[in-house]
Image 1 (cartoon, one colour):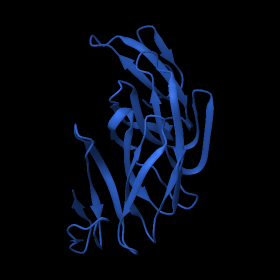
Image 2 (cartoon, one colour):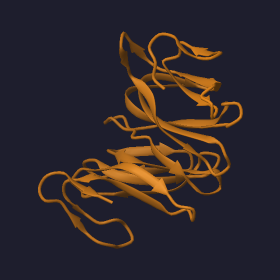
Image 3 (cartoon, rainbow, N blue to C red):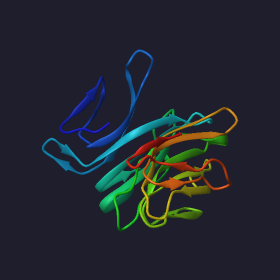
Amino acid sequence: FSNVGTLAFDSVTTTSITGILKLDAAGTGQWLTPTGGQGGGVFVQAGWGNLAIATDGAVLAGGRFFGTMLIGGTAYDTDSQDGIMAKLDAASGVPAWSFQYGTDTAADGGGYIAAGPNGGVYLTGGVDGILNFMGGQIVGTMGTDGFVARFDTDGSLVWGQKFGAAAGFEQSLALTSDANGGVVTGGLFNDTFAFSGGGQTLTSNGEFDLFL
């Protein structure tokens, strides 16, 4: 959630600008994990936009922020928009891990996520520069490229694939996975590109088109 003021669900109350809240089947608050954030008045500069349940039952969260966030005692800050990811224990809401990602030259962070194999997570979005993760990096070309990345249960990068034309704009805006660990992504583009490993070459009609 993103919040200004005091947020209360039954006995669960917070003044944190952002956080993750678990409700039971009856809508009763079970736990709330505050994650800080920056904002003022009615303007909030951080938020969790995507949630998923990992195959090991943990809660996965993806979002974006500007300014500051605080997750499980770890402080994050940025003077441009960055992405944020976290994995939380389903019973208590205690963060198992979290990380910030982004470049110094552009607004980053789609936070579009899906559960991956063995308690891991998939992430997709756009990259304009270099995204550094624990275990590796994703390097974009000129302009914004789309990317898909897989992380293991501990938040380490397993693999990352970027796609796009050298001077075009490509960005993934949605992501889902299947029972076999396969992943499907969709988004928009405005040039000609093909995914690595072969496959169909896609060409836009001059403006932004959609891909799947």
